[in-house]
Length: 300
Ligand SMILES: Nc1ncnc2c1ncn2[C@@H]1O[C@H](COP(=O)(O)OP(=O)(O)OP(=O)(O)O)[C@@H](O)[C@H]1O
Image 1 (cartoon, rainbow, N blue to C red):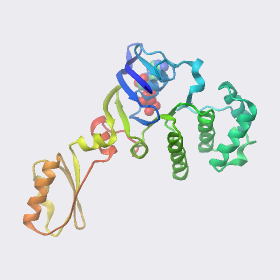
Image 2: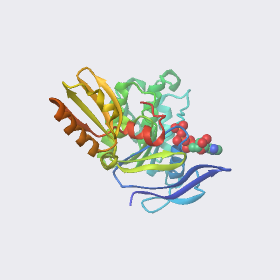
Image 3: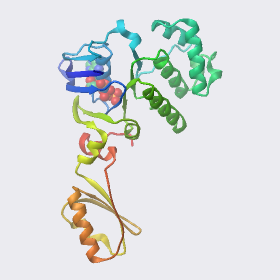
Image 4: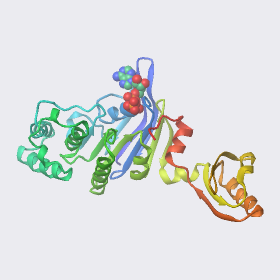
């Protein structure tokens, strides 16, 4: 069953923030939500969490709607990070995890394990305000996962982290999924979605403009990139029908074509003219697809 979002709409006055989204996230999978600023990601998350009621449609987890009464089932990393600055990390986590029904000794044990994993055991007795933003984010992530939720919602978990910490967090998110947690996360950064998710949705103005399996999406998306190395001058490619863009390189060109058929024709054309050292047809990156479909605004 997993998470089912069925034709959900959310209006704020006359403004429609989410306009008829339907998704299903299988239990134990990792699902990516992409979209430019204001696309409706956070609003969708709030409806999943039961913090906002949909204007229309329904959201269920394992067949029942989620509300604060089932809060221990969910872990949530909100986009607007918020910890109590004057509390120590330990006091903070004890407070938050008690709200999730954990006992103090369990919390301290789990906290030490997580601080070790993040390689910051010395933070236990530091005040939150003494930590850098990225390190505060680690503590907030710990607060989202310590009670071992079934469903983990991460709103922009990687934003503001340096590359080392991004890798570390990515590894932890992957481990949590392997341990059976269902994870939905949003990101402006395509690379994280590309690396972690099999399924995704791309939102634009509250609507799903693309959704499904990542590999399928890439395969079925017509546009391909062709990497060519040839001794022949490839300038003529610019005016070939079906070539959308061409960038010359030292020994060839990188060409964007509108379909695999155009790539095939190009191969024959170039081969007739001269020796082809390399001819490689690549799937577009998620970033390319996003820019085409959602009109950019990705971070990369
Ligand atoms: N409480 C609210 N009242 C009125 N409008 C809102 C409210 N919450 C969100 N909106 C509007 O709904 C739209 C979607 O916002 P949302 O925060 O869901 O986008 P987002 O995809 O999470 O964007 P970002 O990447 O910038 O966080 C925006 O136009 C926003 O201004």
